[in-house]
Every structure is written in C-alpha cells, then in structure tokens.
Length: 342
Image (cartoon, rainbow, N blue to C red; front, side, top):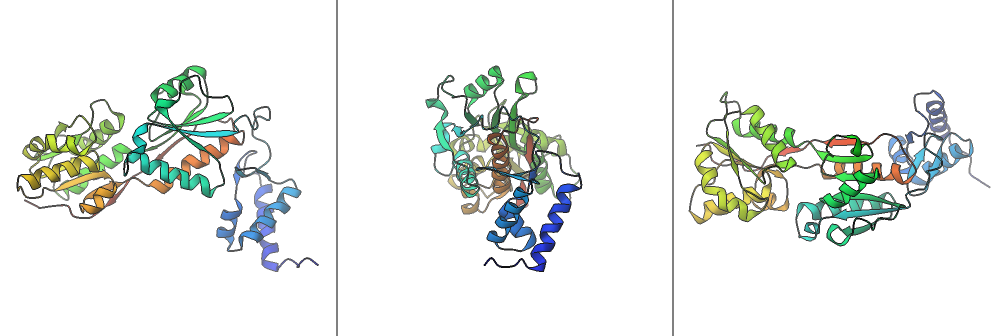
C-alpha cells in the first residue's frame, strides 16, 4: 500500500500548481528540476521526483530526456530532437595541463555529467569544417574555422569565453563569456586604492594586440586610470611575461596589472632572477599558479560559467529555437599578497 502524502508535501504540490497556473511562466519556460525542487523545499530527491511526475501527469509540465523540466509548448515541434549529440570542439591548447582551456573543459564536463547530458570532446584541428552532422550541437572554444562555418550556414552553436561579432550571421550563436572590462576596472581599483591619481606610475601588461579578451581587460583598466602605461607582451604565457618584465617594471613602479596570471608569474620570475623586490602586482584568471605565487588576482567564476553553458546546451538539445543567449559572468577579486607599497 502506497504511503499517504504528508501535509507539507501536499502544500508544496499546491504551491507549484498555483505557480504553474498563474500565467507568470511562459510556454516552454524551464521549471525546477528534481534536484532544484529538493533543495528549494527541503525534501528528498525521491519526493521531488514523484511531485514532478504528478505534475507531468496533470499536463502542467513536461520532462525532457537529458534536459530538464519545462512548461509545455514554446518550442518548434518540428525541430524537437534535431540536436541529439553535443560536441565540445576545443583548441588543442586545452590539452596543456593547468591551462585555461583545460580548466574550462574540466568544469564544463563536470557540470554536464551532473546534469545527465552526454557529450564528446573533439580537438578543433582534427575537425574539418564539413564534418559536423546536422544532429550535432557544437560548443566551441578557440575554434574560429568551425565558428565561421556555423555563421555561414546559419547553424546554431555555443561560443565559450567569447562573444560573437554582431551581425545577421551570428543570429543563432549563443555565448557564455567573462566581463573582462569589469575585471580590468577592478584591477585598477586594487592597485590604485584610495589614491586620486590618474594612473601615472601604473602599468597594464596585455597579451596579443587585437585579442578581444586582452583588449577588454586593458580597456577596463584604462577606464579607471587613463594615464597608466601599456606594455604588450605578445602572448599569454610565462615566457612572454619574463621577456617584457623590464619594461613593465620601468613603466609601473607603483604597480602592474597583468592580463592573466601566467604573465604575472613571468614578471615575478624576472624579478627573482634580477634580485628585484616583488612589485605590487595583480593578475587575472585565478589559475593554480596564482595560489602558489600568492598572487592577488581576478577569479573567473568557473561554476557559474559552466552552469550557464550547460543550461544553454540543455535548452538547445531539447528543441528550444528561441533567440540566441548572451550570458556574461563577472570575475571576483581574490586578495592574496599584493606586494610592496613603495
């Protein structure tokens, strides 16, 4: 004999029915998953699962395989299930241990696994532009040729850690990215403190000229400190930071902001080799090296970035054909050792 429903569970079910019927949620809108329902109302996962099954039986919601719980309608039924596979197409640089790409792949894989979404990893250099089957939803990182093909074909795709250039050919390109300009502005505030200066004696070390992320971090920094100096390292790696460290130290006696933690590590190594005092230094990313080097930095909110990407993937493989999404997450300061004050 089935157990009778408790009064509290009945109240939860009634509250959800009211929420679903009050018209605030549009057809096709995502509803609570079993895990979210359990967390929100403090019930077991099994109870949450049974409640959602009951709402499904009543026609108030529908559960989509490897996707979640949604209100009925709101998608093009002819396209439902058009995407049956998810390919993570990444630059081979993601194979480099402790790199940005490796961290991105790890976080996104963990989130997809937790949500029950299957995927496969493909390296961009091994994928020909004509190799994408129609049933594949491509998720791209540093894969410009595949992105160009998707734009040309009007094909849906998700761009990671970047925003597509505006235009009709990116109408169907979703993106999840970091607010790099915001991070650059925060770095300026960390280095300048309560001073009222305009940036003289401070320096920003950028990566490659024309790189959107590097340019945005520089733009944010200079928006707060317009007279700060700029030193271009020509790349994102430690050796690039070592090479330009003398220029950075000359132009930034009051402090240096590096466009990522690897560049900051390069500056520190150069200082150690020359027996130069540790400068006031801020990095970006919160890579493992930031911890070992006690580096104050701007941390990418990895869990939020991966969760937003997973949500977009879930919607697209369930048949959602609504407008492209642009998700932007803001970095947060991680205060460690800022460096000398003079």
